[in-house]
Image (cartoon, rainbow, N blue to C red; front, side):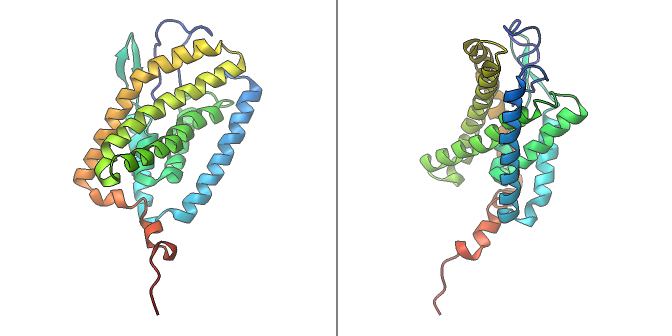
Length: 245
């Protein structure tokens, strides 16, 4: 997700940025606890599905993708009104690795940011992972696959579908954060939605451009990497036609 650094003025819930890496104290303890439960369940499912479907040949790509997303998030660009954003990368990870392995990559990146660089609180880390690493990755990938189907298949629609999905993943993540703030009583829900979603609609454009550029680069330089995501599934007996005796 892109994180607002300065924000458009002062948020209604107090001074500070419109930050997708929420600090401790912004969410109530019950909301934070529920988000931790949802996040743990999603992580457990991702681990199981990755073990079942992930091709071992893609493990180096998984590490490189995590390193690229982590490094790319260090660079911020100006959006409007003193607000800047940085790459989330959930859709990029999902397109390259699949939604399950992509989610684990995002969990690792967000956890390191919170634990090492204090970018977001520990109590609310479950919510931060859910909003940016699960909604952005799984939700974004579901949109990506639907768009590929509508636009003539993945080979033809990969770049535009990923761009649209990346933009929507930012909007969905910021919407989730706004809802959590509203339920927590930190601020009025309408105010939270207006502030968070309004700016992230613009920030999502940057997410889309970076995602499309990265995938276009991979497609031109190493198109073989784009097939690793489904390599194990394609090679499984269940995916192969039956051979007559």
